[in-house]
Image (cartoon, rainbow, N blue to C red):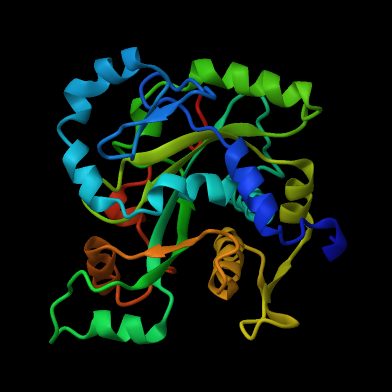
Length: 301
């Protein structure tokens, strides 16, 4: 696929406009509603109505305070900025296509169910060294962090995509995609999981998600992906086209965005720092399948 046919890097204005178009599903009923509101206390789950919030309160109250402590300030807007960025959205499509072998098995009559785990790393390597210095306690000293995509996989045991019913919502998502000319595009749901803390099986948000023909074509035909040069100019290293290298492509652009045009940088919380210390200074490249328990099948039967 010629590079000219891939989405270009968006401007700051385009990122903001894209973020404002993104809507997450209600945590209880899975309704995709423009008026969906976050819990005012933890800001980590969304509801389409006061009725759904009240119905879920008996369960949500058990972890509301913990969610507030575990989620740093980027969680509120991170989902919108990830999916509202045309380039990042496209490479998430490619990642999903490769993860579920959609070029060969598109399964247009049933949804794929995917979880994206993301976390935050220190922007400055010197800050990473400070965090890794076990002789000094981790405290609330301000450090700038950046979002990094860690793993995209089928749902985990106990995740909301497994425990909550989305079959009824697939028909709605499928119809919307077909009306926009996407009859041959696979449709499913993508849950976002913030890594830190004990709530890592809880989705911070769930979106209906489609994979375009262009992404399917790249996943099927491209054998290599060229990473952006970390010096900020020209082309970088070529890597085999895999689901993980598609995420790495997104991460590389986030690391290069020193002016925060993509809105992927935010202050690190103490939990962020402790998580980074636990994973040896880098979140990317670790396998979480064993600890979180990936389940199958990857599509609803």
